[in-house]
Every structure is written in C-alpha cells, then in structure tokens.
Length: 145
Length: 145
Image (cartoon, rainbow over all chains, first blue to last red; front, side):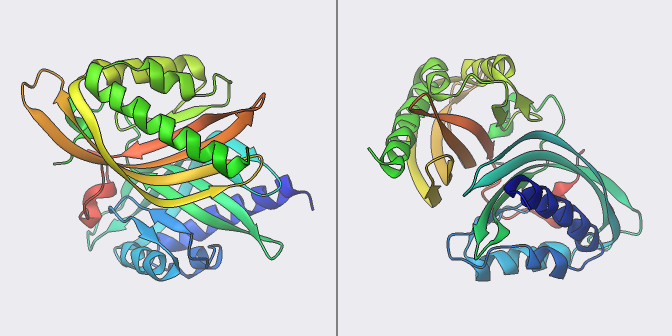
C-alpha cells in the first residue's frame, strides 16, 4: 500500500472511530493513537495533553460526556502526505447527547491532525480540535474569558 | 543546516514576528514566514479555517488590525518534531495587547499548532491552528451558540 493510501485509510478509520466516541466509547479512537511520549492532544475541552497517559485521560473524560451520537460527515480543508509525516485539516460534523442532555445536539469541530509511521503502522501523533467553525467571532474572541 | 536547525530558526523568527503583530498591529513579519502556496491553511481564533494565500493575507490583516501596544510575553513548547519534508510544533503562546477599541492591555494565551515545510530551500509555515482554550472547558463548550 502506498503511504498516501495508508494515511487515507487511517483518516477513514478515525472517522469511524469517532462515531463510537460519540456513543461514549473511546476505545476505537485510542487504538489509532501513538503511544509515544511526544504525542499530543489539544481538544475542545481545553486539554494540552502530552504523552499517552495524559492523552488517554483527556479522551476518556471527553467520551464519558457523549452518548447516542454519531459521526455525521467531514470536509477536508488541506492535506499533505510525506514519507515520514502527514497532516490533514478538516471540519468534522458530529452529533450526540452531551453531558446528560436528553436531546441530540449537532456541532462541528475544526481539526488539525498529524500522523507519523511507527513500526510501519501510521498513527495519530497530534490532534488539535476546537469549535471555532462559524463567522464572525467577536473581536475579543482571541482573549480568554 | 539540518532540518531541525532550520525549523528552530523559523520558530524563533515567528515568535519575533508575533511580537510585531501584537505591538504595531503589523501582519507583514508573520505573513513573510507563511508559504504563499494554494494549499496553505490558517485556523485562527476568529473563524473557520481559510485555505490559500489570499484568504490568509486577509485574515492575518484583520486580526492584526485589532492589536496595538502589545507584545509576545513568552512561549512554551509542548511538542516539536522535524523531518526533512515536514515539521510541526505545538506551543502555548502568551500574548498581550490592546484589543479592538479597548484602552486596556489584555493578557491572553493561545494553544497553537504550526506545520512547516521547505519550499525552494526555505522553510515556511504551511498551516497554523490557534485557539484561546487554555483553561478547562465545560463539556457543553464544544457546542456552537
């Protein structure tokens, strides 16, 4: 399989795994992650997690607040694949019952994911996700509340 | 110079350029470090990701126009990784400036993922993803208003 095909397959598997994540199960997503100390996750809940222990904790916490959801779809903004490192920038459309709510909520994330080969298998080495997907944000939006 | 040295130098130059961005509202030093290719992308704190140089020029000009009398206070590197063809850094950027019409200096921090690649022998920024989520957010926070 070419590197491009491997990375495309990893992205597709990640999307499928996010469907399970939105039902509250982080395990399929976890399987796609690097276990190395230089892996990192900056998720919409504010984590700046480095290394597998912190990343797993952050993912478990986020998944535990999701149920009955699904991965709705995605739009690719940019993608580049080289022999040793690859990345994708995408918008992910998701839905779930969030934090005990009875109603399904639809939302979107903008996501940067970086991938690297580890013992011949490509893994996620970084994911940065936030909910800034609509215009316009107020001028003050770069400033923490 | 090795890729690691080149990337380190670009990271340092970007930090100096951000200082100008915050101080004078001048986007040019930052813009000079970006690739001007069609597949470059920027997901800044103000809105959805933009792709291509024209959109990035407009977006950085808009963000800079809202900044004055500021500075970059400091940077924390979370992860840095460089190969010959692609490299990235995950950073916390500590910034301050007057924002919009405010007469007061505001301190804030951004989580930033930046991706670099060499173009004609010079390393350039090909993607930046930055958001102000540096404190833990409630689970509902991923949902758009």
